[in-house]
Length: 319
Image (cartoon, rainbow, N blue to C red):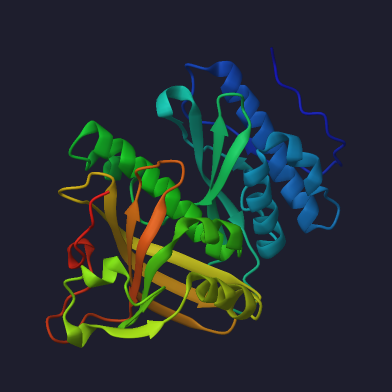
């Protein structure tokens, strides 16, 4: 049965989607193509002040729809071309599918940021969009997964790439609910050479191998960090554009669900910009609810040994 989208559309030209792959499930492929074409058309109509994004809600899960609406409202996107040929990548044994690299033009105001964003639309096997993410630049999705040393490690690396794309999207769309969820209550948050912790007895900090010359402690709760994001960074910046480059993923030798994720972060807002080395230590034991235990950011390496904080600067407590 052919899937038909019933929306009242104007005569504006609908972008054409020709998906590469997915030939083993032609009905789902056709449905996804149809949903994406209507979604892109409505994006264009909305950018011209004629669209109704809410008309697309039946094609999204609730969470994905909220992310999508925030992206549209923040970035005012429109299609970059008339025809797209994205890849359809099967995930989770056919339970989910990624449609990667849908290029959209976005409003970057007076900044020198790129005016193009590449999106990933994730679909479930019913053809509903269940995630919307910004593509990480300069990496090959397949090669990162193939770096896994075991089958489980390869699966985890795919999940980590998904998470990092969502993590980046959360900052760019000011999705504070996502960020509240992923930071653990006792997470260590490191900015430059400053480590902030929830309480003085933080066990993760006590188990750190960082030298005293590398650590300066500032008391800060998770609530204070979130409050700063909401009431300062998000409130006083018209736009945020966070980019990650040179992504590296390291699995802990003893605890297979603990990973270190590092990359260069480019942070650009309407009032401030910088570049630094970002490191996350994450727990993926509950794959549906990953948790950040450590987040570090360094503008440059430590002078004493030219190092950056890494997974093995912390003695992970057994769980």
